[in-house]
Image (cartoon, rainbow, N blue to C red):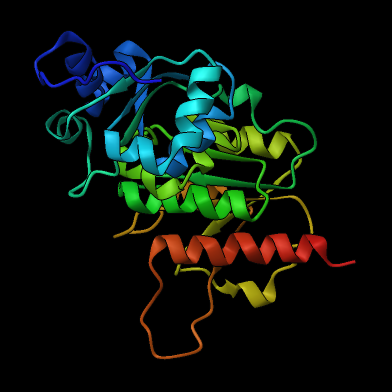
Length: 267
């Protein structure tokens, strides 16, 4: 269980964790922060990923099972004051649990594993909330991997980790992949590569999605550039049946991924 309370925001332990809110230090230390009970719960399920756990006394009472699990796994648990937790938290209202975790991504060559059926490729996606929600949707749809290109947001960004709701720990995640190399890799693995873009001449209703598919999702503001659209086997748009101009990235991605997942599961 947690020992004496950490109250000094300038202590080496707190400063070492706090620096992980910056991407450069995450890459340098090869660690990141997972905040909140859901993220901590899923991180603890993977052996060796959770390196330290900070908790407030209140969170310790609300989630004793997480403190017990961490202790049983030999993870150091530090009770932190509200001031210290505010330093570590990246939310307006801290939930009182922050884990220091080792990086969990894999090289492009190692994902997806086995015989893949569904993959999400994020190209030039910059909003961490959207990226995390796409990871969550991909996980829920049974995707085999999520690939972040070198021009996309860092999936270890605090907002992205929270938005993934633990899905970052559930499926293979690749970061920093060049778009061209990623598309070639997916095609070599037998996946049909579809670009989700509003410029597509065909809609989801027009496309056979029953085969192995990789979806490319682009930037929230300007979509996918021509050179990436040219790499895809087809460009497909989500049909709009009402008066909305469009769907946001995360919603459109969820629709595409679930359309593929359902088509692949029809007898």
